Image 1 (cartoon, rainbow over the protein chains, first blue to last red):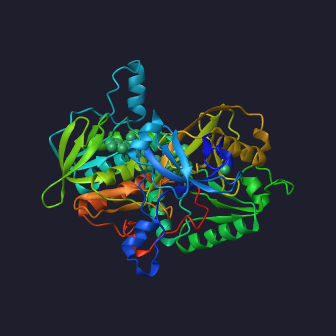
Image 2 (cartoon, rainbow over the protein chains, first blue to last red):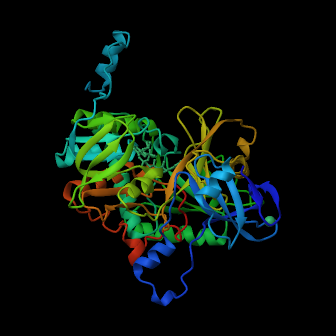
Image 3 (cartoon, each protein chain N blue to C red):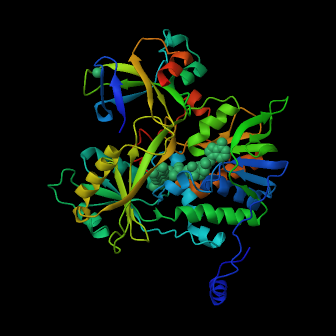
Length: 100
Length: 417
Ligand SMILES: Cc1cc2nc3c(=O)[nH]c(=O)nc-3n(C[C@H](O)[C@H](O)[C@H](O)COP(=O)(O)OP(=O)(O)OC[C@H]3O[C@@H](n4cnc5c(N)ncnc54)[C@H](O)[C@@H]3O)c2cc1C
Ligand SMILES: [Zn+2]
């Protein structure tokens, strides 16, 4: 079971309190009517699916009820860090710092 | 290749079982191949076999980064059925089931294919409606599937608890009698042996790290941990790693990789005659010929390549099994493990040409591709050899996520394995 730190509650809690909400930093198109089929495909279906560092959303469903983002390694399942929704994607540099 | 038969078995027994030859050789990679298949799971090996056997393309290598069948092939719960809802899927999975039916004889390998019947339980009014719809849709497509009352389900599967007081009472079930199970390792080994006998090179411990392309954009070969190898055509059949290999050719994929767990109990006397699936409680179960109950869970919620998962999902699955089959409540579980499954948004696979000339994909089979092993390989071989899809896999393109022509088995439910 994963242990996940909610950046709002500032507590490390068990995975069963959370629900996963897919890849992070995928922007909802501001003008949907203007999108081409290829852009729709990219927005709806194409994902990075990396072996390694992944940016993803979690929902503290049995806690504060808020969404936040996380950086996690998809091979070890270790969380590098979590951060509030709306914050920019942490840089490679920030991630390396958090790992050490 | 020694032909397996009663006389060879008896003969070798008299020779103290010495002198059985290796089932396939371990060649060094050649400089060039007509076709390279990336991934030595059941799908890749079966594609190599059909390329050589049906299309006369035998200058083929299967490149496997680990050992044959060490991916999802050797980790799955081996349920085979073809009662899918959508027309395209029914044709696809039934094509595979048809191939399973003669396969042990064809490749002279005991796959322990057993058509013991697959029973899918309905626990709610919604389940009843969905499964009856499946039964009707399947009949229109010529796929066997019948509706059973709770009593009929109990007669077919005596350990089943059909008490109306159960937390999830059984309201009925759909039964596909032609469904069943097969021995997963034997499928990989049997295809490997048959393909090798036709001249295919099977190369283990050889990880593909790059896909090379010529000035014209066509594939030219692969970089691997055992050096660079040229190829006119390359087929990706790498399950969990489909999107990673596609990325090597600059293609973004509609695929994400999730953990899926399974477990087996201690072995017991034959007690469980068929395969039972329940979508609502999300568990499925059968008994292997060794006597272990083979039990599978649902996919985990998060993306991962770890080939493992949390205990709470396994506990949830076991609770569901105890609820449906109270006679198993005191059984001990022997071991559990995980695989990594490649999920597409519509829960249907992709067997297709890619935008890169000479590059083909068979992937996105997610949690349900073992049953398709002969069919996936057969259709991938066709697509590679002819550079165009067979009518059966023509709808299973990468482009459907752009055009919107999804084959939505996810919404069709009853999708579990
Ligand atoms: C727990 C579990 C239960 C399941 N239950 C069922 C079931 O009951 N019924 C059913 O139909 N399906 C089931 N499935 C799904 C099924 O196992 C898969 O869909 C199927 O095995 C896919 O076959 P494959 O040959 O494509 O995959 P694999 O056997 O995973 O083969 C892919 C191979 O590619 C290799 N590879 C990856 N990257 C590279 C690289 N860069 N270079 C070289 N080689 C590479 C891997 O090492 C691997 O051996 C289950 C899966 C799991 C995990
Ligand atoms: Zn919280």
